[in-house]
Length: 285
Ligand code: HMG
Ligand code: MG
Image 1 (cartoon, rainbow, N blue to C red):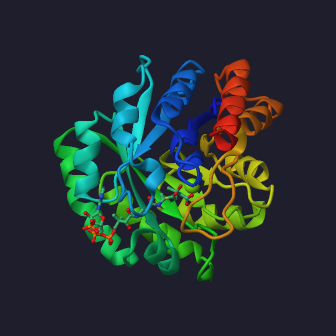
Image 2: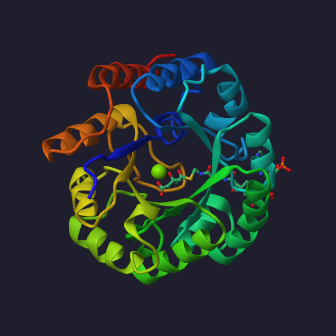
């Protein structure tokens, strides 16, 4: 099995979306431009959601317009509905993502509808993405634990994954939204979810609230996963998941992957610079 582990950088979106200070667009662009030279294949830079819900992402179109696009890098955006999809297409996002949940409580808090309703809302987005030949990723939040509903049954994650794959998602990112997962619960969840599709269809998106994210990544690598979402400097959290702290730090994932004798293709020096910049963005202003 391949020893290349891809880190999908989500710092400019998941890392920054929860910041209280409204970060100037030029600062966001500077972070993305720095990250673009680090060796990532995919960077999530935008989110076309309601600015009333997530004010920090209101300048997503300007971020996409202002960055210097590096060849071979796919710049991704979240699109919860057709309005978001149209915004992402107009801003020339290279790929989009729909984002659902495996728990009802989080679905309601995050996107204001039930899981079933969210799948109905995603359907036209999926059809439009297919028609536009735009790659579409799928997120599932709360794959082991939900801040509202407690433990999530792995079967529910598998059920949502099957639906998102049937809609045309090329990859499903499995979110431990509140960082409560352990290698044991992540493995138990993967054992069921991998009954739906092979490990090449899945990515791990583990927040690091309990400091277990790298262990969870290692457990997932053992199950065959080779893509993990991370944010430089460990920034982030979801505004609708109380207690959710940062995403796992890109540089920590890189170091763990290297320690396992595998590769990420990333430039550690640039990661350090980007992590430093991301941390300063948090406090400046
Ligand atoms: P809603 O209230 O059910 O829908 O929101 P609505 O259609 O009634 O729209 C409400 C208002 O939003 C309206 O404006 C719409 O025009 C506007 P108003 O009439 O009140 O002035 N609106 C939009 N504006 C801009 N772009 C849009 C858009 N859609 C509607 N695309 C909605 C539903 C999904 C829009 C809302 O709940 C929302 O924006 N939620 C934000 C959710 C979010 O961004 N969460 C964070 C990202 S997910 C995450 O972090 C988890 C993840 O990292 C994985 C993990 O860690 O688990 C991915
Ligand atoms: Mg997240």
